Amino acid sequence: MASQKEKEASQDKLERKDKRKRIDESIEHCTHVLSVLLQKPEMWCHPTFRTVRECIQVMKANPQQFPPVIGDNTPDGTAYSDNNAVSRKIPSLTPSYISGIAQYKDVDVALSPILQVVSATMKYESSTEGKKSNSIHFTHLRLCDGSNDVMVGRLSMHISHEGNKLRPGDIIQLDVFTPLRFTPSGENDGDHRLPAVVIHNYSRIGYAAPRNELNNPIHCVNVTDSIPPVVPTPSDGAHLDDGMEPLIEVTCTAGSRYCSLYGVNAVVCICDANPPSKIDLEIVHQFCYFATTDVQNMNNKKKRNMLYWWFMTNHYNICGKGNRKKPPACLLAAIRKAYPEANGRYVPYEAK
Ligand SMILES: [Zn+2]
Ligand SMILES: [Zn+2]
Image (cartoon, rainbow, N blue to C red; front, side):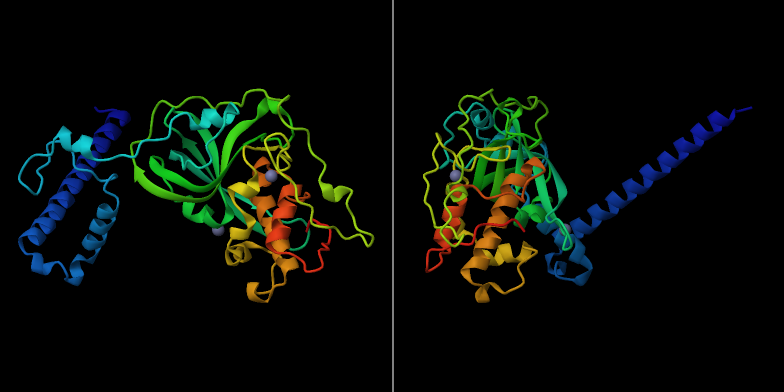
């Protein structure tokens, strides 16, 4: 007599066979529908075929993801060959980009690097302390470059939902972005920095099979000596008689990088990479929990406060703490210049 185990195994086998049969039948049916359409194109617009039309639109929009397979018959009657495969243009990834950031090489900021998505994870971060707490989203991508190095790509708030739909293998080109190094702990020590990029805008330009052989995460070279000392912001000691602050311009250079603060080491000034004057305030307004007035009715003080919050949260929260902190001198100046006070007097920044 067959044991219980044997019975179960044969039951399993039957179920698998049944499933296989059902799949074969539906593929056969599907093939039939498509061949009818090919023979009678006048039926294409019929409501019955709506789902078919929609599927085909998605495939046409993503040809890299749905390429023909070698040996398939093509519309011109030839078989699809390897030559066609080579001519499909897969954008090539920028080499040595991530190691360049990690090794403190001169990163060409005019270059829009092409990188491939390894994974995307949406994170929730609390944007406020106290009563009006709400959560905001950040998507952190793992991105690889042409040298198989990997880094974090943190998407700015306004593109985090869209970016969370990116899939492993998607190839993106960065349009507006801030390369940096950061310590996950938020401490300002040079030993455990990782290369990263805050992305303000990108374009998805293609797809290729995800790479199998990625390098281990690279730590930045130990540069404790070449990290500029934390520069006291001019506003610390620059109060006017009545406690207000003037606009103090600073030159943020590699030697005195004012925006290298709170565990973030900026490769270029965060205000050069993403100028405050060019930020669309309507977008910031959608996310800013304390902005209650419409942008068109806002005074410059309110606009500045929104921008301080936007920059501090997008850039410095990458370390997991610290958007309650004072903006760096270069950012204070750039935002005050973009939205000035006629009398030149500014209320000292107070974290909300
Ligand atoms: Zn959401
Ligand atoms: Zn700066």
